Amino acid sequence: MNNEWLNAYVLHRRPYRETSYIVDFFSLEEGRISAVAKGVKNSKSDKKSLLQPFQHLRLQLSGRSDLKNLRHVESVAPSISLTGTALFCAMYVNELTNRIMPQGLASDGVYSAYEAALLALRDEADIEVTLRQLEFALLDEMGLLPDFTSDVEYEMPIEENGRYHFQLDAGFIQIPDDVVGARGIPGTALLSLSQGEFTPLSKKVAKVLCRDLLKPLIGDKPLKSRELFMTKPR
Image (cartoon, rainbow, N blue to C red):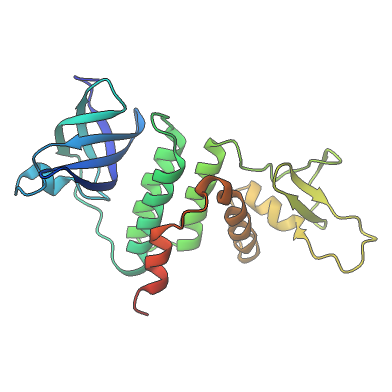
């Protein structure tokens, strides 16, 4: 890794000893990886100014342990400017990616979705769609994204007019027509999601599904970005 350049973004940084930082990066080539940036904490160096979130970087790392040393870093593009709700959402994107992606697991799909999410937030795209697409990419990489086209119990295609129950460890199961008062998930929403279409109905379904599917991956520790968003001035 000593001579390899990595394309990466900063997910998080924290103080390390008196003069350094430990920085969590998300890279295209090596996935999530942590490195010590030595001697930059109290300096005005270019290296410190670059170690900020939402900026596409190129870096070189060294070391054989899980905690690398940052040798070189340079900017690929200007920092993505975010404010207000978009900034809080981007912080959520960073925290979620850092919490879920295993160290050293490279994923073209998640990296592309991560980069697309930051750009979409910058361009003021639909925030709900932006977050769901990133969450879907993470769930897909972890093998937890359900099949939106198939009934897992009866092994039949999802029906547009059917209603379905979601079983967390299995998938979607059709609710029989003779079950009175059953609400369930509309088949039309599932079929929309299978095509990557976010209608008002499918957006609501996707939000609930992602909340339930992400719980085991996030764990019991609350996400700081969610807490900050809840307390931000309205």
